[in-house]
Amino acid sequence: MSKVKPKNKYIEKEKYVFQLFITGMLPNSTHAIVNIKAICEKYLKGRYHIEIIDIYQQPSMALTENIIAVPVLIKKLPLPEQRLIGDLSNIEKVLNLFLWTKI
Image (cartoon, one colour):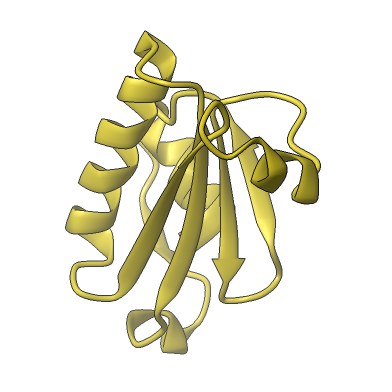
C-alpha cells in the first residue's frame, strides 16, 4: 500500500462536508455508508459531517445534484467539490481523491 500524506498543512484543521446518495438499503448503499463512516472516523475524527440521502425518499435532491449513478459520494467542503461513484471499498482511492496525495 502506498504511503499517503496530506495535500497541504491545513488539511489537519479543515472540516469536511460530504453528501452520500444511496438507494435504500441495497448492499452497495450499505457498504458505502459503512465504508465512508469508517474512513472519516479514522482520518477526520471530529472534523466531518456526512449527510446520507436516499434517492427513493428524496428524489428532488438527486435531480438537483444531477445524480446519474448511486451510490455516489460528493465532497462539498473544502472546495473544490468532488464526486466518487461506488461503494467506497477502495480506501486508498477515496483518500487520494478527497484527502491525500501519494508520496
